[in-house]
Length: 513
Image 1 (cartoon, helix red, strand yellow):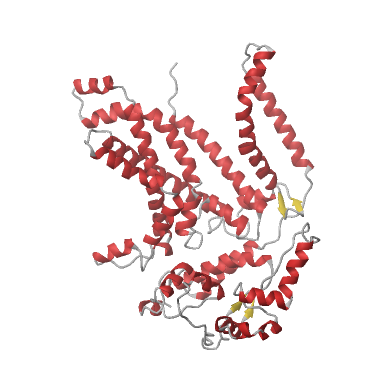
Image 2: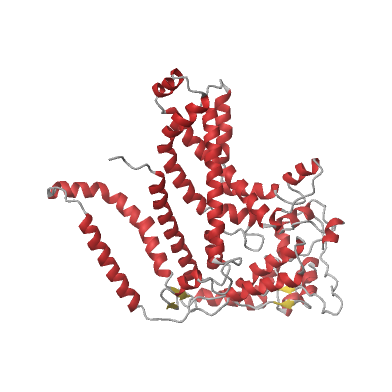
């Protein structure tokens, strides 16, 4: 594989978008793909579909193409609907197959549909039909969702030259078995309900004892006050409290929405005990938590440092260029984050990225950023720092603008140097403004899903995933374990709530008696 890449026969760090771009631009003579590729090709491009020759290693069976079969999955509510029967009829009869082939450009299985002269003369579909005759059919099961991510990671690992196919497939099999392990056994909801009711009563009694008595308001004034508060309280309940309660309730169940099974705290026990994997193996809660904490600390530290330095510099009189610099430095914050993340991902590409091109000017070897944890983590951090430092810079600029001039002038009169004035006067005055920004930035960074998902994608092998991206994978790429993902979300909320409270106590100066 690496030899073919060095000869220029295969692109490095290949992806579907890159392969399509190389083929359309004429830089790739051929591609291995399916009929769906035609939707991304320009109308005037001339190409021919040909069945690939059998590929076989010594002593092994030949590698055959895979064929996916379209299937319709009906919900219990939609099974009896007339439109469901009409849709199934479209999939099985000859006329529907002819329409799907000629209009939808799909390779259909109905043999009599190919008697249509227009379909028989279609070289594109006929070429894929010849491939389908000797292809291996993939199962028509929702469980196939749990196959694609481990298989993709194993393929990427081999294409990058990170290891042999055997260990990569073994790792993929472990990930698949972890996603497909049997669910916890069902249990009675009464023990947890009783404990929850007692805990709620104890908390209510505790807070009532700590409540400070206030003078009673008249009924009219009380109703008026509740009228002012009601819109905000309703919005908070619908947008914050209700989803939180729904997520907490979902975390106590396994199965589908139509057939849920109550398992109590079993999802939390599986997460915290790293069921199906080692405690500090890739994909475990504890290793992912460690990566998330490291990710948050590194990013917030760089955000605050860069924002503080640039904010102080831009607060000084720089003439007309100060406004230009301010605008340019705020642009990374103004551009949509997913656009920035995809742009940075392209710059980190081993073969075509701008960063490796710059390194090549100094004679350095290209770096495969997403093949090792250190470089993939650094790529994620660089992208997130680019997105996050303008916020801190704007906060510092606003705070410096409001600093009392008399205090700064008094420091100058006392003969303080610039460093002394910054360290002993400016920085302490900025602290009350920076503390809420640091807490808010920590929460944002802790849940920075888009950067991790779009830049590294968790590579290599899920090592750079953070808690929020791991929860996403359990919900949408690993057999739809919504209860397990909801338990992850509740744990994330508890971690953020407790750490935010702890930060507030540690960073807020105590009032002197």
